[in-house]
Image (tube, rainbow, N blue to C red; front, side):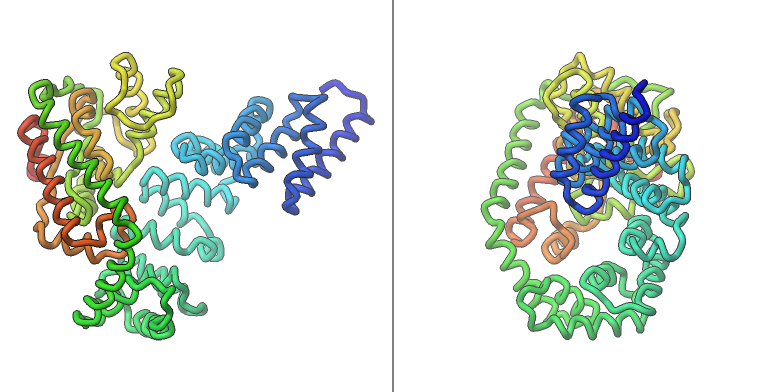
Length: 453
């Protein structure tokens, strides 16, 4: 901007005033000042950034992204702007895009807590828990104490239960137990819960036992740890009964959608069965197939001991690749694969390969990226027929154990029918029938564990 010194000074004072309003939570006043600046100087990146941050802090992500993206054109090396874009994109569930800016910010200011935190959150968003854990380990102990539950979750998701337990143990040395800490303890396998940790938990649960607003699943799980099956069953029944009454209609709608998918695949068997051509320059995607609580994560953990197998967890990588492909071509926002036009397939496959690089998956056929997300099931026919090198592995945990865990488990937000055993059994009937259809149509893509290693 080639302006005289007085005008530049006046703009700087106005922008400083806007920032003070933003930082004190007076976003409307900050926006008013920024708008007055931008009316005369639409390319003033400082005002664009302040406006974008104000909008983001007000929860207006779409408008914020427009401002911040424009500001980035003028000041691409501004670290604060990179972090703001990362946060805004993450809040809009555009996690892979957010990751690009988070990595940029971390490269510029590797010791900045906010930069490390948003990067860890992005790794968590794409389910790359190894990278998330590494990022959190770069923090100082004091910094980690500010995001302790995230640190616990990253270790837990890697099935490193000893480290996860040590994190909670360290936290309880000088702090009282909270709802979040209690819930985390209850997630641990019993043999990783120390006597001291259990003592904290016992005292905490006793203070909540008569609190009707407290999570009854947590009390049930506590009695389960105590090996008091009668009390555990009593509390699970009370918890499930309360939840089911509130979710009955949604549960019935979910099961209806599963019946519709069974009907679709049976009606289209004659036209299905194609498998995408194999490619030596493309990694293998290993889809681990099984209902909720069937051991998919445990299988991933065991397979990932092989150097050429990379864990993708319940990654949103497919949906993100689909959404990016639709957006780039001017289509309505969508993350489903089944409706993708054939003209977009090549671009979708390239985008899927690009996003896979965030998992350090090498572009060779003998590298495997595992995926376990529940939503993958319904897109599998499209995925098998159009994406190179797809293999599937079925879990084999007993049906009775799966049903019991779905019904009793506290951490089960994905299904409304989890709270009624008859509906759980109907869900499993439909799920296994769907998988049987997949196996009949594409027998060659289902593999045994021995052939993976």
